[in-house]
Image 1 (tube, rainbow, N blue to C red):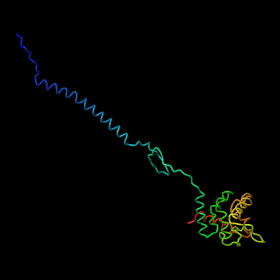
Image 2: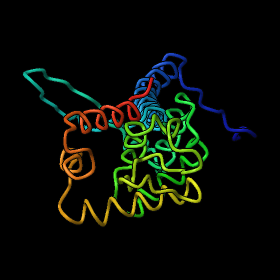
Image 3: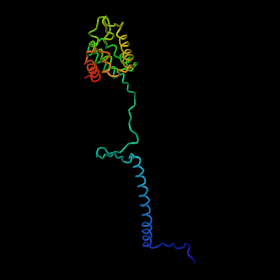
Image 4: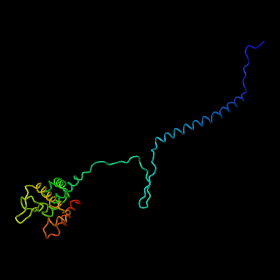
Length: 214
């Protein structure tokens, strides 16, 4: 008679161990290689995100010196309009204030009128300094700080200092600049007394004082 249940085959323990070792050595290198490649790719991706890109080094040479600089993608810039009139007004006010001049309230107006007629913004003030000590030594009530219109019968007078500023500035343009008296030395030959030799020197000195006032 055949037995009721067939006898199951159990391979020897030694064969099982050998099979397990073979599978281990076959699968483990593949797993390790796959993990290493994945880890390397991940680290490279993170580094690319964290480290800023640097442009190629630019080379500069000046007087034999070699300088290398890494340049950013963009450079900071400063924008804005510089208004020369603002700084000129400050310098002129300071100069007139230090000289205790009645022209002080009209510093801005002097600059505006000078620009209007194409004159150096310091010229009329420097002439006033030379002719009258900036209006401190003028005929009473004349408002003429520039020695303008002096003749044998007296000195020309103006109703106000602004009128004097306008008249003298326009006169310098029409009767001096437009007629070819371009420099202070040229103006002296027509403006100053014929015997004067230091008028231009004084006016130029005062113009420099206005520009470089300490």
